[in-house]
Image (cartoon, rainbow, N blue to C red):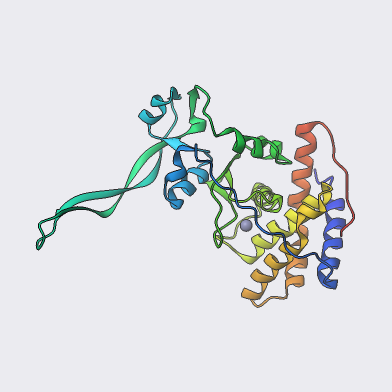
Length: 283
Ligand SMILES: [Zn+2]
């Protein structure tokens, strides 16, 4: 089961030595994913677009909206809710002019593109190409996790891993950086192993995901995209906020991290039938 544990630990130690000596490259800039103009939900509020992505869908419309573009919601599919503004027309008491104001929000049911069948849609190909190009995508698929994107923004989360009840449900990406994808996939593996018990953004689970993502991409022979510098910044940020030494934080979670990485590599070997044993040298 933990066939890759040794390699993961060796790679992890290599990364920790680089952290310690300060020989990590500077962090890579985030490559924000911009939603295509042709995506129907592209003009929705950022929150509503995020809701679409968090449910694992690349676009969304109403039941009728899908019929309008020759697509049909499959039988048994459940809608999810977005927020719709409630508008009323009021009359200004002094000028007598009528104007429309938003007095609140209500929820409105929508269906995701992936819940429908029918005519292909323009504009979704680019996003699909990006998702299809992700290394280890087959691992997420084997675990029943939907992968989707949303429009990334400065100062907002670069990615999400979402569970429903106890089940892993979706990974949503706001950036093209592979380090974010690897980070979310490690969260999924950590969850699958029953180790992800912290609620919210906890230094322990975040260090597992960030260090694990870095190890994973190094093991795949992609040291640049592993973004050791970005990983170090991220881990330091969480450690400092909790009065911890960042290297000690890494050491404390190294075993749990290597278990998650190992599970991903093992699942990849099982799903693709080939075993990738490339381990690159840390730069
Ligand atoms: Zn995270």
